[in-house]
Length: 145
Image: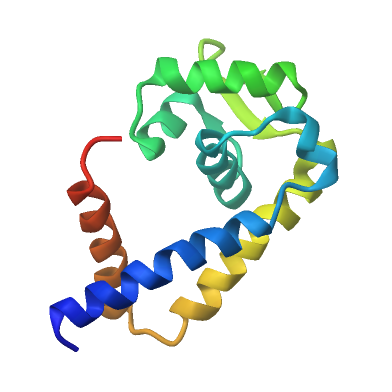
């Protein structure tokens, strides 16, 4: 495939992918929380990797700890996240998804994760890395967020 053919195919494909992802919709139980795209990555990390500290979340999300702290505060006030002191270091806060919302979040984010799993599984580890690296390069080339 020539570069321009690939560009053409992707320019047609990306809006359809985004449209289908949006149609997954927020579960009824979560609609009233006004979850924004910035919350999705935070929730995905907690869902797939389990409870973690503000600093761990900040490192993974590639944002300042203060930014994560604000998001966690917002989601905690709504009851979506739980915060507790780290028993080993009381200065650290451990963040997790509240038990009453975990199933809804898992169902919601799990649909996208399962689609990615089915799409990526047939690829070799090298091909998966190339795919992810290509998407990251595309994001960089679009400019600052």
